[in-house]
Image 1 (spheres, rainbow, N blue to C red):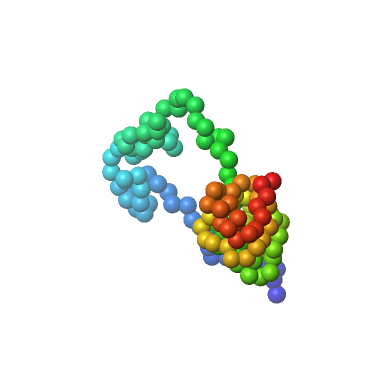
Image 2 (image 1 turned 135 degrees about the horizontal axis):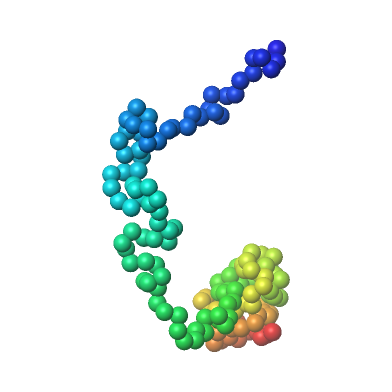
Amino acid sequence: MISLTNIKPTSWSRKKFKRLGRGNASGKWTYCGRGCNGQNSRSGGWVPSWFEWGQTPLFRRMPKLKGFTNALFKKEYNLVNLSDLAILAEKGITEITKEVLLANNVIRRKTLDVKLLGKWELSSKVTISVNKASTTAKDAVEKAWGKLEIV
């Protein structure tokens, strides 16, 4: 039976503190776990977290932030090849929209617009509505007697 007289903590929960700087008998020996020499072996030795020990620091390796970059305004698209649409056409889907592409896991991000690329040839007649299409994709759809709508 458990009572206040016979309970004790588990063996690992109460770890004994190792006393540093109290001679070799303390268990850490001569250098107290600080290493031989250097800034951090002295009392009051401290370096900031960004210090890289003599290596050229990161903020000096980076290029200076000057000028204007257009990367903030870059337009991203969900890219869809005609080979993906050919697989959908084999399943019997003739009208292909963004919702159909999302439902069939052809595209993953629903917030981005869809761009059609012309890597493949269509063999069946389909109606496709996308936000943008390459010229080779337009030619391939027209060649298969399909219809391409730019939304």
